[in-house]
Length: 313
Image 1 (tube, rainbow, N blue to C red):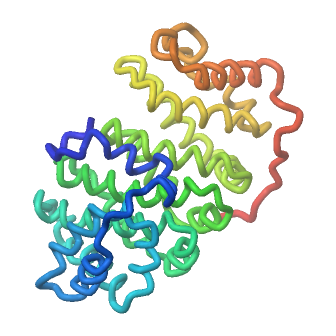
Image 2 (tube, rainbow, N blue to C red; image 1 turned 90 degrees about the horizontal axis):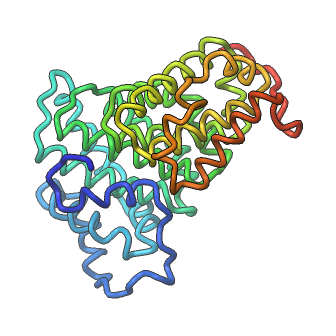
């Protein structure tokens, strides 16, 4: 559990990467006039904080909130202003719990926009995710910073959940992979889980797998971090995190060069019974691990994607 002390903390993973409810299943009890009023109040610095709080609470009960936010005058600028305003608190690390909660409410609304099919493409075209990357660069382990990183990862996680080529193409032009790898190495369990989920979704795209396996340096960095995570999980097991780690390894084994390297560097803990107890009730992860070991023994699936070299980066 992420230690924010907030009541909703136990459910934050569900909000970050779980499938959103369909509009048909959502309660239609929200007073839309109030929603309109809160959106208007976002543009006024004096009323913005309460509006952020109220709208962030309602984002899962108003199916068309994302288009309403994106197309209303001044709203996106107000949300970005909330983000930029706390950049000075990054270095030196002076971010308070109040500042963190406020900007995380703004990030929750941006995640809403990133998740919606009508606004996702223009959200990417505006390069809004780049405003979040300074938060992912932070290393302070205090609660305000950890909550900020986790909520920022949630916005990226909402993007990659869609399995759209446009999202992966955009992310590969940014520094999201090294940022995720850093968090996978040293973040909290929840942050590691969302960061690994993002890497997994990038790898599952053919262009993402090609990009990571294009050079030895890229592959070795990913393999090194995954290996460290396996060693850490052997000491402090987490079935949820292990699932994403194994899926990353399995996808890497689809690439012939990566598969050859994994024969030499796959951690022994994935070959023996170290995680037998952790995986006892997880059929999908057990299946993925079995398939991974089979790929490394037999040469992999003959239907695997053949990776064509990309232009040097």
